[in-house]
Image (cartoon, rainbow, N blue to C red; front, side, top):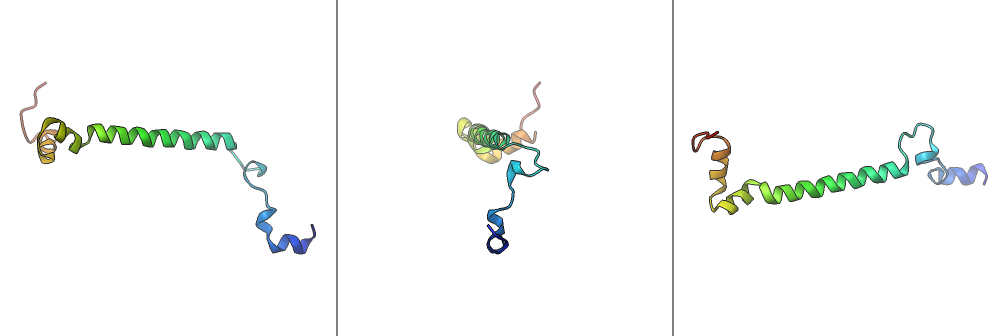
Length: 80
């Protein structure tokens, strides 16, 4: 490869990822981080589906605003 070939498309020949000296994470670490983030997203979705205001209202057969008032201690006395 000569200089003119390189200058036509230099992004094809530049170093990337683990080839760079400043790289802190390996490709495996990046994949693991992404997998953990995906798992966290799925867990948040499950928690939301089960414990959201709408889910609690449906479970107890009341309006969502009733759940809001209960959680804000506007309705009912705090029983501990």
